[in-house]
Structure formats: C-alpha cells, structure tokens
Amino acid sequence: MRTAFTIWKTSLLATLLLLAACSSPEKQSEAPTKDPETSEVYTQRRVIVADSLIRGRVLDRNGTVLVDTRPQYRLKLPRRPPLDTLALGQLLGWDSVTIHRRIADALPYEEAPAGYPVQLSLTAAEAKRVRRDSSDWPKLTLTEGRQRAYTANAGAPVLGYMSAEAQAFFRQAKSYHRGRFYRLRSGGVESYYNGLLHGHRGYLHPLVNKQGQTRGSWATDTAFQQGQDLHLSIDGKLQAYAEKLMGNRKGYLVALDPRTGEILCYVSAPVYKPATITAPDQAGVRAKLLEHENMPLLNRPAMLANPPGSVFKLVNAAVALQLGAISSTTSFGCDQSLLSCVHQHPQANSLTAGLKYSCNPYFYQVMRNLISRVPDSLAQDSTAARHLNLALWRRYARSFGLDSVLGVDVSRESPGFLPTPAYYDKARRTSRWTYRSIYSLSIGQGEINLTGLQMANMAAIIANRGWYYTPHLVRCIGEGGPLPRFTEKHHTLIDSVHFAALVPGMVAVMQRGGTAETSSLADVGITVAGKTGTVENDEGDDHAAFVGFAPAQNPKIAVAVYLENAGFGATAAAPCAALVMEKYLRGNIAPRRKRWEARIQRRARNGY
Image 1 (cartoon, rainbow, N blue to C red):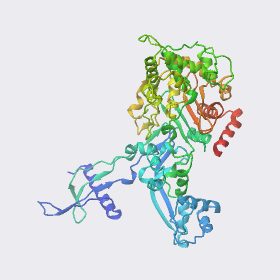
Image 2: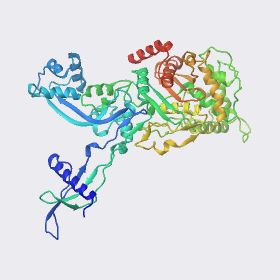
Image 3: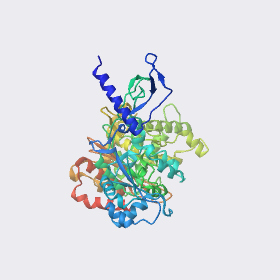
C-alpha cells in the first residue's frame, strides 16, 4: 500500500518533469538503463527544485526589507537611430529631462557612438504601458527576469551586491587603474554572507521511461533549502539620515550600540545608491564613480586607516593611568615650547581638564612620563627603558583591538598600525632614538593609523568601561542570532576604574569651555561624553575627527566621525555625531538645531 508521502513525491515528480519539458531546467541524461525484470528502458535525469526562489532577503533591525529578489523589467532600445526620445518619454510617463538623463546614465562614457546598446530598468507600471502599446513600438524589446532589488537608497557599502549581477561593473572596473581595488572591497553583506543567503538547490534524480513515467531514483535526492534572511543591526532610517549629513564629503560615520557591538549606521562618503553597481542602466553613473577623485567606491570605515588625532589621547591616558605614569589629579603646565596648543585655556590641573581643553602640551608630558619612566629592573633612563616602555604601551593599546583586524563582517578590513621599537630602530637608523623623536604619538599623529571601525569601537570600549563585543552588521541569521564570534566579550588590559576616570573629562568636552561645547545636547536632557580631534595634514586642509557616546552614564550609542579636509573636529565632526545621537535617542531633532542641521545637510550636498 502506497503511503501519502510516496503519492506526493510521485505527483511532484510528474509536475517537475512536465515543467522540465516546457522550460528546460538543468538536467543530466546518461546512457539508457534497462530494467532486468521488465526489459523496459529508463533514462537518468536530474531536476532542479525551486531554483529561482532560493536567495534570502536582507532586512534592517526594525524588519524593513532592504534587499529582495523581485521581478525586474528591462527595455532594450533599438540600436539603429534615430529614436524619438520625446515620444518614448511619453510612452513611459517620463518628461524630456528624465528620458535624456536615463539614457545618458546607461551609457558607459559620454562619447558613446550612435546605436550603442542601451537597456533601461522599468517599473511594473511602466512595463505595462510598453506592452499595451507594443504594436506602435515594434523595435523595442521588453524582457522580464528576477534580480536583487534594493528598496532603499542608503547603505550601499553595507548591502553590497551579488557577484553574478555585478559582472558589468567588473568589466568596467578593469579598464580603470583602481578597478581591482574596488572589485575586491565593495561586496557588503551580500558577498560576505553569500553562502547563507543563497541556500541550496534541491535535486531529484528520477529514472524516466519513454512515456515520462518514473520508476525510483538513480541517485540520492537532495533537499531544497531556502536561503536564510539576514536581519541587519542597521537602523534604516538612521542610516539614511546619517548619509544626508555626510553626503558628498569625504569621510565616514560609524555608530554602534556599545552594549552589543551592533552597528547602527555605517556611512562611507561620498555616498551613492546601492542599486548603482548592478542596475543595467547605470553604466554611466558607475564610470563617474570609478573616475571620481574622492573615490566614493572605497569602503572607508573598514579600509582607510588614518591618524586619529587628539581622540587618541583617550587611549594614551588610559594606558598611562594603568601603568602609573600619571593619576587622575596629575597637573601639567601648557608649555608651548614642548608642543603648540591651539586652544586658549586655563592650566590643566587634572586629567579631566587636560581632556576638556585637549591640551597638547599636557598629553606630550603624559606620554613622556610613560615612555621615559625607569622600570625597577633598570638603573637609569636608557635606550632599553624606552624600548621596553614603548613595547608595553603598544601591548596595552592593542588590547583595544588596534593594530589588528577586528573581525567585523565586512570584506578586506584593514588592521591599522601602531609602531614598534623595531620600527623606530629602522626608521631612525639607530636604536638610540629619544622621546623627542616620537612625541607625535602623544597627540595621535605620526605613525599611528586607525580605521573608522576601530575608532567607533574605541568609543564603545570607554562607554563599557573596558570591554567590547566585536562590531557587526548582522544581528540575526534566519531565526537564529549572529555568528558565534560576535557574542564573545573581549576585555582590554586596562582596569575599569581608569576608564571611569576618562568620562568626566569627556563630559566636560561637551560643556561650557570644552572644545565641543556647541554640540551639547543638554537642552534635551542628554549628557554626551566625547572627544574632538583635528588631524594635521601636510597635503591640504586638516581632517576633523570626533568620538563619543551617549548617555554618558548609561551609553546606548557610540559614534565615530571623520571628515577629510574639513578643519576642526569641534566645528565639523562633532555636530554630525551629536545630530546622529539625538536622532537615535529621541527620534527627532530639537527645533533649536534645525537651522544647524539644514546647514550641515546643505554642505554635505555641495561636498564641503
């Protein structure tokens, strides 16, 4: 007696074989097999089950679908001119400006010859209009297929693309000197989690006779497995808002939840739309992105490691406290003969005041105490002492996740750099270098390089008073959680009491007299802890940096902002971070900052 399962499988096979005859799915045929009992001849076949329904979706932390596989309509224009673009625009419901811009965007270069093949992406409504009037446009070719569809215009470096759908971009990129660089580094979660998104095809292996009837299988069937959905940690609305603040400027903005390591927004600027890389009618836009001097396709938060500037004073202070080089009440004079200080301020009679005023001479002396101190094992300040102390400083600083790959779920993450004693021995061509030759470390300049992800994670570590979860973009895979490594807590080598000693100074930065007092959110009841940085740049205007978290005593968001050639961190980077914090914590911006917000967004659109 046949079971219900056997009946169902036989029915499914019959249906699939009928579909195979109509649509010719992938199948494998071998030499006919003869049944020894009935002498009937059977053919071996392999049938794919649900091939087009496999890939999972990508959603933001609130359940909004950002990427899905959906029907896509393409209109191929005739290669032989002339083409009545005005009439075509009327057919599609586009004005004259739109039709010319869409065709120009589809051409890979401005001087493309007449008749160059052009395909335009259409909506379902536009495709319906073309079908309705197809008899009047016999030279137009409308095709329908399934492709990854981006429902939002933000988050391009996060979402990425499928390699199979980006082949046109790869071909374009090969013709540019930066082509390989971009191709290897822009895949986003679509590339990083491809195996989980893609799932597995199901294969049936029936033996089929001449009448199309089946008799068993010639190989073990494999089950179809739907690709898993990815639930990102990204807040879609916050991502779009942050991109408006960054716009066409060069830099990055990374915000994460310090309690979990989940990345809330991830902006690499200049920004561009996610669909640009794979859309068939965006070849011209891609060409401009590839040629642009500001390299918008560079995934800046992960790949670009820069000197962090004065924000690194936080790390130096924590290490100095841990090793006993200073205490929270240590006072240093603002001695301009040691290092220039651009801020006019009272004497920094404590660590809190040193951070509040970002006094360069103060932190010069903090680092000098650290590097030049004489360990008990050595009789005097010597070359050996400086080598030992620098190595110890680096060991403690590396526990912040610096000078190493954090392991974030992005492709091609840069490790950054912290110098070693051996590095200076080689660079200075002597092992007898002095503190004066490496003092730039005290203000986060010189050889120190950090990525945007490391900067944001540094802020999260201070917010947590010494520990962190590896930052990540995916909080749930299917019905489960993130990858196991993102649930492992990492501890620095600094005691929590020393991180607590940094917070009053970071809060003072945002208060009256602090370097970022104008970015305070005290008027809406949010106490922000932050640190500004202005990075000297020999090749142009200085870079602006800021790291911080809020609320100061119960942090829910940590932010790092870096704007290239933007000037002071207090006036360029800090306002962007404050607006993102306010938007995330309150959902809206207070009226008193609306004009401020509009000015930043206007500058972002203009790229300065």
